Length: 246
Ligand code: NAP
Image (cartoon, rainbow, N blue to C red):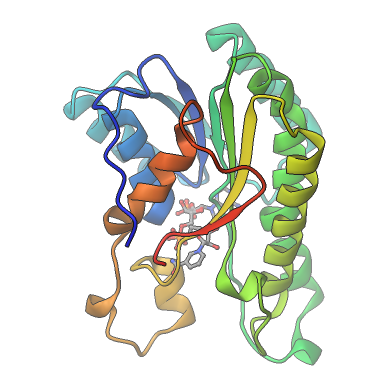
């Protein structure tokens, strides 16, 4: 597995927003970025979980994070515009955005995907990323270099039966990343996708309830690519999909 050992404070003075920062991989990414010096904006649905991450960052001696409680299922373009305004006011720029939050909903045959599941998955996994990216691109353009990371999945690169709306949403994510990378070629914004691979989280447990999860990598085990892709000054990737467990 790829390992990345950047300088201990390579994210000093960088402002990084992580979606789904309260749990699973997003929580670990937020803690890791803070550990390397970043001021992290913790966006997520469950305030208690965000507060626990906030407390952990402070306990670890990190820069004071910001908490953004936002349910991506109900958020509208005006919420994202408001968020962009607040970040502009407080930090005047953004150095990194990790799109990590996603939902799975029920897995099963295509013909049984309900309207409700389809709408919910597309809203949280695709539309929210579209809106958040549109709102935050002007701030990501401000620093000399910045990083925009999307999260995909193996089933969003080669579809697999019964993975339903989730798999289709990840193809859309991949498309959004590729389109943006082409539009922002040579712009200073590094735009890539990361595929975590099977990782010990609640989402994985929902998809594979019977597996022995002690055999899976933990979010902490797969942080190297999350750090590397966020290191916009040194990362040479743009428009690519990196596999954290390759
Ligand atoms: P997870 O443990 O289920 O965590 C998902 C995070 O997203 C949680 O913090 C959750 O917040 C947040 N979230 C969900 N719905 C939201 C909403 N409506 N509004 C705001 N935040 C919301 O998932 P994970 O396994 O860490 O997955 C992280 C990313 O990796 C996802 O994009 C997933 O598709 C991808 N991925 C994971 C695996 C794997 O094996 N784990 C494999 C391939 C790809 P709450 O806890 O407050 O609901």
